[in-house]
Length: 301
Image (spheres, helix red, strand yellow):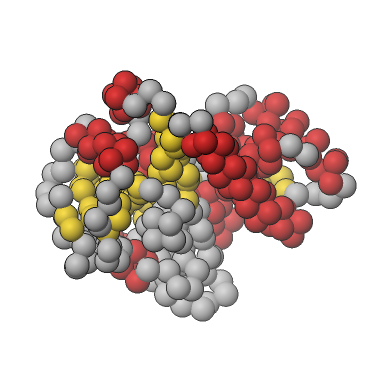
């Protein structure tokens, strides 16, 4: 069992779909499936329950997912410490719900030209922490979405993105050109785990209840699984329709709801010039469509 193999497993476990995981890893699907089977054979247990509609984690798979993510994070920290000892730096950027797409080839080229000895690592985070690890000190910068509690952060709005309703393709609304957000009332919606940021939860219409029939989700992959297996509905960024296209799932444009504001967030009073330069490079590639109004007393640029 090696780190690359664990990375493959984490991608499948988070996407709950071999096709999407393969695309995320820039692999074809057959070798990815083969590596997961080899891992199951090595551990002598089934990690995933497979079906034409996707995959489910077994109890053993859930245990391995937690351990694998911790091991991979530890390995990255070790790599970064070694790089720093040789005069190299790594900036860790947290990303939530597809906001990491801002770090495109143009941003990479500009930043690398300015800082050829520096590296940037993207840390994809689940839906439970809209600060993408910034509040806990796991990342230097966050690419995320408002609204959430931004106390202690500086915020730069990059752009606005409309939302789509995600639902089973068999749903009567699935063929609509667009729907009003009020059409989703009274339906089974996603639920974020207890303790989720209230502003974040309310924006995405995540249910606030203990109803055992309401699916609890922590990743977009789990949202899509809940749509297919539990006929749940919910809201996602519009780009999810392309990045997470899934058989049996429809994405319908939504009116009557604020768009999602994609932002850069960093600790207020940040003094690290390398971090500030990355913020400058990434931020200058985007023009905010309207000023941010994050929770006070954060600083908005």
